[in-house]
Figure 1 (cartoon, rainbow, N blue to C red):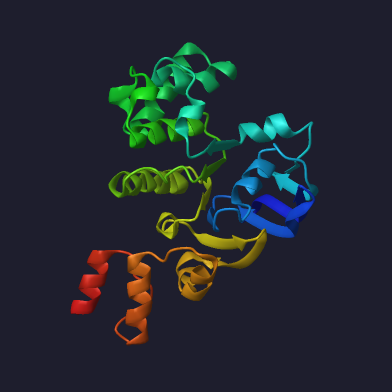
Figure 2 (cartoon, helix red, strand yellow):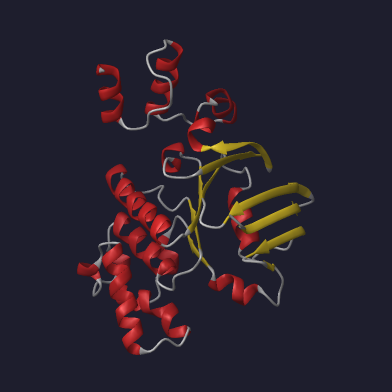
Length: 269
């Protein structure tokens, strides 16, 4: 599997202080990568670098193109980004207007726009709110619209920067299931930026950064075992992860179990 993003020797200073110093990171095409770290660790700065908003030292190659002033327009077409505050992105009078905006700028025909808007609305189950003003939707609906708008042009990469932080757990679980299906069906590369470990369960791989440095990486369940690292950098361990680690110490289970029903069934065997 080839890399869709390659970062080599990346350094970035803010007020003469290094946020990143000689960071190396590769993200595979079609991978779901979770980037975890406490507030101020450099997570959002990394997103801004990837989408070409901040100058840096080093090499950054996206979709086989070095990030440069010349290549930024093409590269940005390959990336959809959703941040925590969805309201910042709403510009149309209705949800349908917001979903159509990027397609209109790319000169799709009216028939193509209608088809693509209805398709992504069906995916995120927002067909019934297409004529609503997005500013008056619930938090979960707003994030569904923001995700749909980021994906309506069928980009290769989706970056979710703490975009699920303000919605309830049931809504979050349903959205993660939708994203997991898109990840598999479209070979969509997803990068989840978060300090909430419960938002990483669907990911293929997790990296943990602190003070701009990569301190651990690996398959999600393997990294979740490193509870001492998370405690040290101030990231809360989800209940099911904490329970799994304790039950492993007593020999009752032999791996991390994230689903409560699976845990009950395993313990009752």
